[in-house]
Image (cartoon, rainbow, N blue to C red; front, side, top):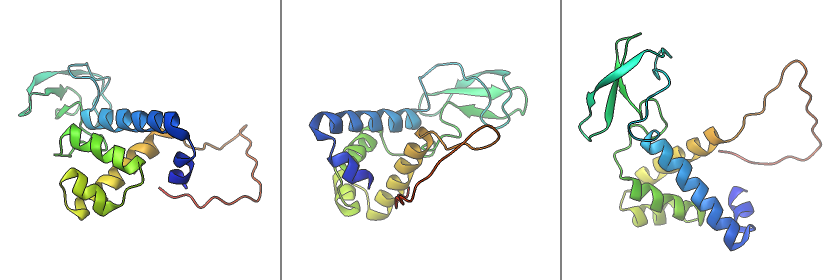
Length: 153
């Protein structure tokens, strides 16, 4: 249903959708702006962090004074353990927004179909993390009609 809705956007809407998806996935892949001081440790939440050299790829490493563990800007992110370059992810997002099949996306990015499936699951996780969750509780009212949307991430 997402692809059907995306196809009805027109050319400008589709371009904006692809640009937003690329930005969300690439920021999740990169883990934020390089060299930016992290707010807190992704593991324990402690705000006392100090620099601890550079990683093998040249990214800044950080040391948490609370738990004593080191981390990088991408630690704890959805795409933290991805070994694919950002250009491959960008190409994958373009094909995914165009509605290409897993096999076609795999050929486009030079990966196997199983990796293409995992890439799709990761992209959907990023999309899910960008959506506002429905919150309920005291003082929050929700109304629903009889419409059923068969939507799944």
